[in-house]
Image 1 (cartoon, one colour):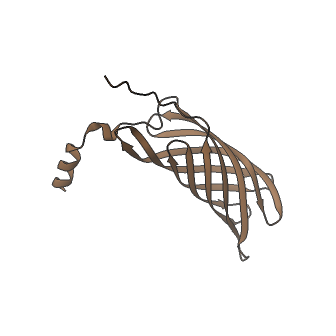
Image 2 (cartoon, one colour):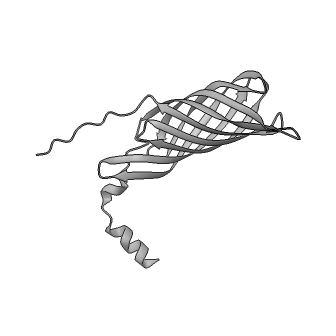
Length: 167
């Protein structure tokens, strides 16, 4: 354990520089997710949804809060949903040039037009602060079933990278 702490102390501070979840930073993401839901005692049914999410950093380096809205298709039925969302940054992959990716814990509570009441979340990886990969699970506590989804998305709001002048 002491050797591990010693090695961490030798790493340059730049490797731990925070480049994601900056103060007043925002996320506007469009995501397409596919998966399945499983009604109690029934077969697995295909599930697809398209969602738009907005988040704002409230605790720099740690937490973003926002809202999600979208539409879902399952069992030959379309519905809309909306609700609050929170993203907790778990891990940042940094290089000397800045962050390459981060891993987030995503928590959501969504209400749908088909009387859905979904609570859940999952993991989201943000690559280059532009591409989003999500693995989500939600429990519908009104209809008593689970949704499992994998998605890909794009973040439309991200900071511009300013070139460094080599002097």
